[in-house]
Image (tube, rainbow over all chains, first blue to last red; front, side, top):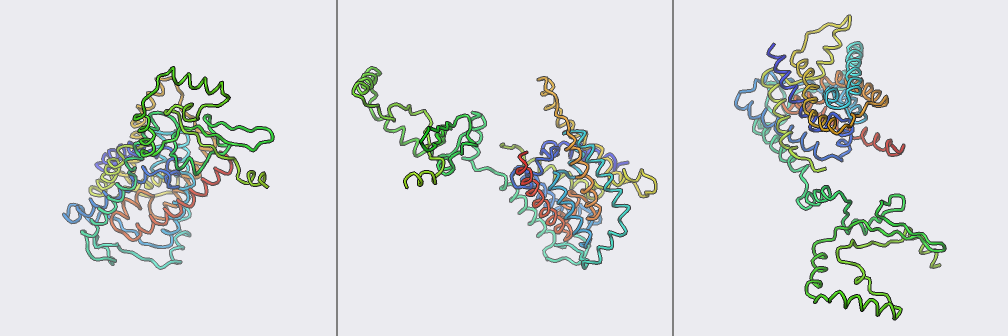
Length: 304
Length: 151
């Protein structure tokens, strides 16, 4: 009965964690497996490192009974089963635990179907266990541990609990470093989230101008008859701090002219048939437009 | 998205699995599915109480964690998203393949990772490496398929 209550307590904690990690949504795991969600990798690596470190330390203190550790043999069914398990996880975004979490925290009907499918899979395995176990003969069976942390033998590396603990510390450190955003990038992301506006760096804007198909609401596509197509990107661009500082300095140093003078100058220029300078017409706060031809080939054709 | 508390959550997750290992044995959630299959005629075996308790409490824990979010949505008058037939089919097929694979491998993802690899077992490291390899390939294929179909 103690086992049941312990299981309930651990299950509550696991359910809460799975939901907070986003595992109740299958797409989160699929995106993480495509290496697009570093936060989940960070959590899982930190969990693995913490658990490894704890097992090594508690084993060294003899608090953890090594008989509680289950060491499976490495054989053909394990290899085949792991490949099938991984492929199913990648295609669907489910794990046996995540299906249960989706039942409570995600879409219940889809979770129920996943649990139902799991029970059907367990029944099928029980029915087909005997023929499937024949696969074990295909590969030579290997057993044992990497370190001398259990009573199982053989072990590959000496060092025992200390080396096991070192592996745990390494995993923990890697996990803590993997998902960490650089301070500048984290700040940019935070600003972008608060302003709710797409901000691109000047370098990326110069390298990859938006195509007309991908143009956002802020992008103007101008196509004049008998003229080549130009794309004017007016999405706010985050300039490097050195450039921003350089732009600000002359404005601070130069004496600001009265408004009347500027207006007069503009009207004088207009009477003379000239247009004012672009820098004068454009306030400093305005985003810097990036003008690019749509296709380079068109330009070369026209030159010919 | 800038996620917070990921490190702390990872540490708690690791400690949960270690607690199960200290008091009873590594947590093997697939045993709960096997136990459900025992209800069918012709199946025999003992009841894994630890796994059954955990499997029963995970939906409750997830529900409690999602409660504030659901409350906010309900307060705004928004309705929750419903499962589509495609998602249900995907769930059923995924669950079937997962448990078939887990039966062959001798344990699911959490057991192989937090029971096998954590204790330094060769089989655990091999299983984790193979699972990740297959999962990465499958996720890439699935993602490209989704992109190609325009979904």
